[in-house]
Amino acid sequence: MIKHILLAMVLALGISNAVLAQQPVDINTASVEQLAEALNGVGESKARAIVEYRETNGPFTHLDELINVRGIGMVTVDKNRDMIQVESTDSSE
View 1 (tube, rainbow, N blue to C red):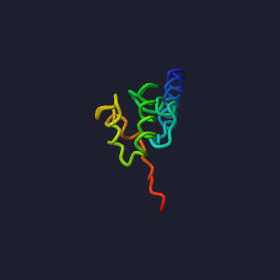
View 2: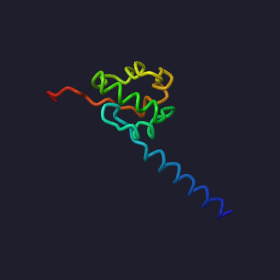
View 3: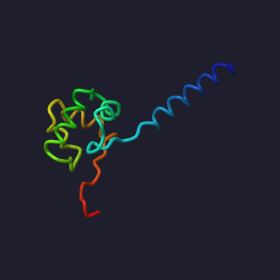
View 4: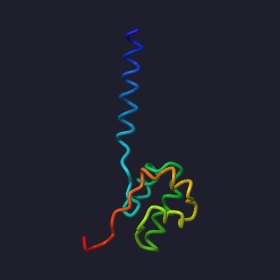
């Protein structure tokens, strides 16, 4: 019985640490590796497309602009909404 309780506690701690460790990623500054690791359904190829898009078109002003990136649709944006940040690009702040 005690083994089961200890196992449950260890698993709970592991799961909570994994959830807490995930921080939102800024799509205007994140590397290909950071994007691929942080975003669900975004591998290295799509992450590279995000970086190339922002280098060509300038910084994103809203996360929904990700749908302009080849291979990224609204479903991908919606399932990652809590993990995406778009920092202000206004230089007057």
